[in-house]
Image: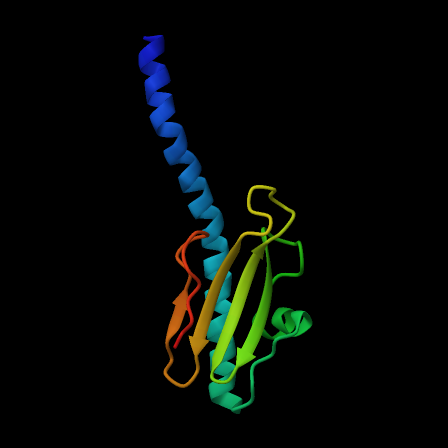
Length: 125
C-alpha cells in the first residue's frame, strides 16, 4: 500500500505543480490582455499613441500598482505594435522574474499572448 501511494504521489505531484504554475500565469495573461484591449480602444478613439509609463498603466488601463499582485506590468510602443510585459513580482518567489508577454498590432487588430513562461514571446508582426 505504501509503495502504491508513493507511486501515485510521484506521478500526481508534478502534474499538480504544473497546474499551479499555469494558474499563476493566467493572472498575467488576463491582465495583459485587458491592458492591451483598453489601450487599443483608446487608440481607436483618440488616434494617439498608447501610454507606456507605470502611472498611466494604472490610471488609464487599470493595471495594479507595483508589487500589489503576483506581477508587475510594463509597456512599450513601437508603432503600430503595443507590447505589455508581465514580470513576476516578489509576492511569490516561485515566479519572481518570470515573464509573460502580450502584444497588439493596432493596424491589424491582432492580439497575441505568450502561452506560458517557457514559450517564445509573441511579436504581433
